[in-house]
Length: 97
Image 1 (cartoon, rainbow, N blue to C red):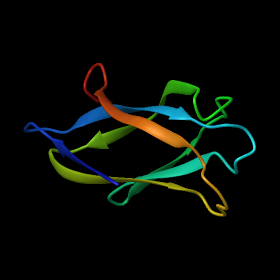
Image 2: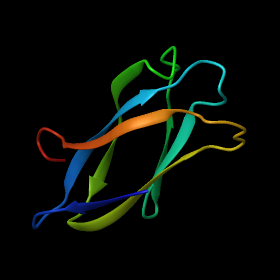
Image 3: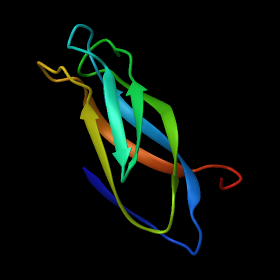
Image 4: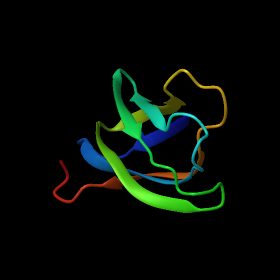
């Protein structure tokens, strides 16, 4: 879980980008991203190994100013590690919304 603080008097739309590694055959690559009551599913392909990382925009979020809790979890059933999430980044979208 991450806690993010969104500054400013108005909300913005953010691209959600990830840097991850995921070998093949380690279980489903579907994750659920949840911020407050809003959630989305993200499907991540295998990168080839635990040491091979990829960066990709995986979706976008509309966030109002204030503190938010962002949770990422694997969609069940899960029997082993799903991925190595090295970085999660919120990048303001061009045009703001």
